Length: 214
Image (cartoon, helix red, strand yellow):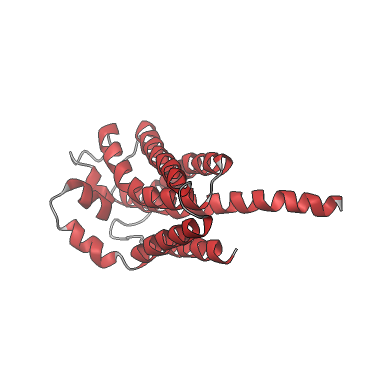
């Protein structure tokens, strides 16, 4: 009986940690791809700029989580799960099939939109070094997906512990993925491009399915 009780006690925590990890992984894949693009183009990202990117991304994610939680108090758990799943599936599909839209966006003059499509455009002064101001611009572009994911997760999961775990994962994973991307990008030819958006899309769709069936 004690063993069964312990299993029942820890299963929700294991699921919570796994879900938080997968959500932040899906979001941080964009940070890895951006870091890879900067590394391949020999653009340096100083540690302070990396911290700025991470803090802004985690701040946006945290705000979205609590915003979603606030809305979730006024709707049924079933409806919250459905809305969360729709958001995750929609965002996942946009990542998988978004190449055409990114090509269209890249041709526009709006700086933020261009950075969303091609992260290396955040190096506005072409100095091959990302300043803190430029890092903030890149962070906002990267955080847009996090806003949608955060609102969806906040709707589906009403738990302060979950929010703390996911924000903690976000702080660590963004730094790790961005740094790893730059490191690997520095070691390949400039013409090589990495498009991992589809992978993040698959993770998000998988999470949506998991929310529905569990």
